[in-house]
Length: 161
Image (cartoon, rainbow, N blue to C red; front, side, top):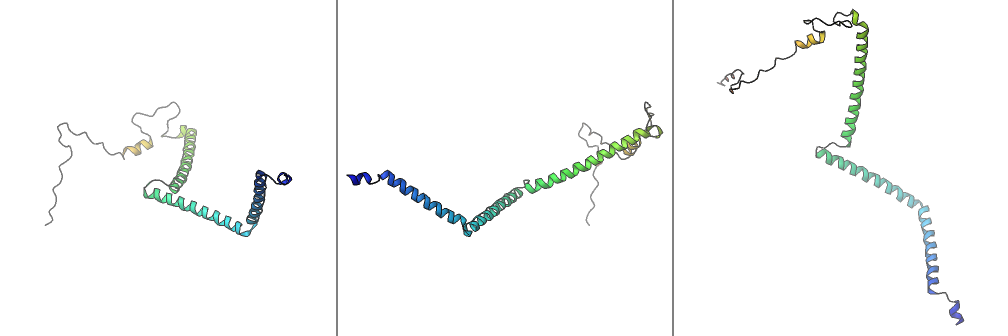
């Protein structure tokens, strides 16, 4: 009976085997992680992941382009174009403000710009209005109510003889 008391119980044997297996696995893992092969494997894994990500992005862009939808490149190109247009518009607005300020300062001496409180004569038009007046096309007249066309009849076709 004394031998039975000194013998470890099955639970203690399992615990000791578990700790032994854990320490051996830890040593093996440290040897594996410390090797150059593991570092090489991690590098290849990172390269492959980056390549797959790029391929999937390119594939999605191609699919969107084939569906005639705007892709990432299209959106970026349009945003740059919009930014350039906004910059140009801002410069134009600054120029317009500068011209208005200059006209406000020179208003009394300019023949086409009325002085403060003075209204132009009814028959006198400003220079831009005069320029625009000659460029407007006449408006079409409304079609008669009886269904007849107000346009001239079509010209007869020339024969090919």
